[in-house]
Structure formats: structure tokens, C-alpha cells
Length: 195
Image (cartoon, rainbow, N blue to C red; front, side, top):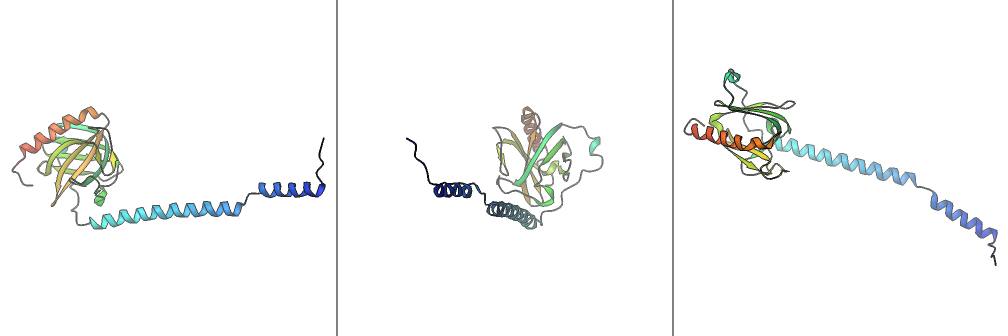
């Protein structure tokens, strides 16, 4: 047996269905705009933190430029890969941002008897004299970047009164042990020179 629904109930059901299908666009747009403003505010805070850190590190001396005649020397080793960051030595999360040291980039490293030449396309190049080199080691983490075991070549060097760890990753990670040996050998031969 079929039950007939009175017409006024049909109209009421249709009105309820129609109101359920209506999207409140103003509320959705308000939420999206609010979320975009929040994201922009977080990025602004991050940028302000970066600038604040750079001001705190403003007493760090300017980085040395590659000396004239450096290219005439015989390279002990060369490497292409990525420059990850520099931190205060022994403090893998204390990123140094002054003078562009916090900028990740591609890198070309050249080690000679004179020192380490760091060429970074798109970022500031710098030179570390052999007398300023302290040690090299393999590590897994630096400045918030974590890599597999031995995936990061960390070179410790002196800049002014501060020891700095700079992290590099070769395009061919098998090159890292040779770099550790060469840098550590160079530092042992420059012991006692002016630092």
C-alpha cells in the first residue's frame, strides 16, 4: 500500500533539502583569507628572525676573498655538490647567517696548500686560508639538515675569534673520506703557523 505525503510536507522537505545544499561562500572565503594571512604572518616572523640573527652576528669579520695567484696552485682536491650551512663549531643547530653563510647553494670546493676556496653560484664566495683550517670530519647533521651516515662533509675553520663548522655534500659522497684525510693532513702540516 502506498502512503501519500501531503503537499505541504513535500514543500517543507524540498525547502530543507535546498537549504542544506546552499554553500555559505562568505564563510569559506573568510576562512581561506584568514589562513593566507596567518601563513604570510608566519613567513614574516621567520624573515624577522633571520634578520635578527644576522644583526646578532654582525661582529663576525668579513669573509676572505680568494687571494691573487690562488688558481696557479696545484689543487689537492676538487668537489662539486651542495653547501648546506655554517654553524658555530660543535653546535649543529646554531646557524650562522652573517655574510651569507646561512644561504644554501650549489658549491665548487678547491683545496690547495694555500687553503680552501669555496665558490657558490648565487651566493657569496669565500676563502679559508690553510692556517685557519682546523679539521674535517664526516657527520650526519648540520643546521637542521639531517643526512645518512657519512653523508655530510663538515670542515671546521677559524674566522676571527670564532670556530665555524661548514657543511658540504658532494655529488659523489664516496669523495668525502678523501677530503677528510686531505684537510686533516693539511692542518697537521700547518700546525704552529699563525692562526
